[in-house]
Amino acid sequence: MSLDKIGIAKRIAQELKDRWYVNLGIGIPTLVANYIPENINVEFQSENGILGMGPFPEEKNVDADLINAGKQTISALPGAVFFDSAMSFAMIRGQHVQLTVLGAMEVSEKGDIANWKIPGKMVKGMGGAMDLVASADNIIVAMMHTNKKGESKLLKECSLPLTGVNCVKKVITNLAVLDVLPDGGFQLVERAPDVSVDQIKKATSGKLIIPNREIPEMKL
Image (cartoon, rainbow, N blue to C red; front, side, top):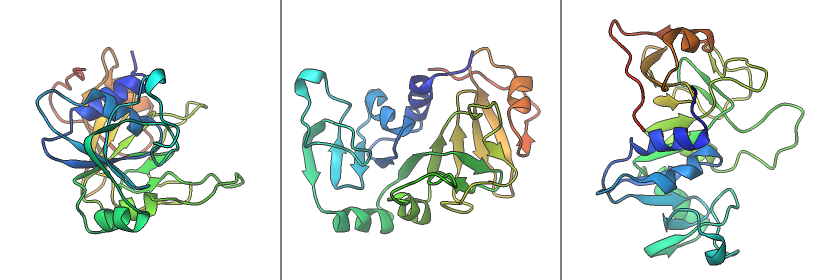
């Protein structure tokens, strides 16, 4: 049984470490803030100028002026601070963020990411993703393993315009957890509950490396 978006977010939340500063991209990554493990303190940063984002608010507590980079209403934890974009991107470019979680349309076996444009469709621009992938040392991609046509999104080479090159370290999908190896290739680390290795093979177009051991199921 493959994971839904919440399941992906829960698994990514297990990658968080105490006292990390973390940037969450638009889409599935924003859900991660709802599932912080107990006994750790994590500060979520948004490039529109917030440090200390909390989980999505209940309807009665919604403040329309308090939003993340994806224009979703959010909550702010005690001690949260607000600042301009210049300060926000100084944090990002200065490598003061320990983890960046991004959505993607495609990821290549070399760690390239395409997540900002589909040719022929109007977009407002690349946004903060270019700075994030150029500056971050630790990038996890959260996405579905295949597109709506059932075609793999984990490829030998990306077909869509690139956002960044050789930057993705880990991919967590509805089917699997995969490390992107320095020499290229997706190394299978974990599989979703009741998802077989063969299913993951069939859904992965890029080079898939399967260790010579039992592949454990994700624990959510």
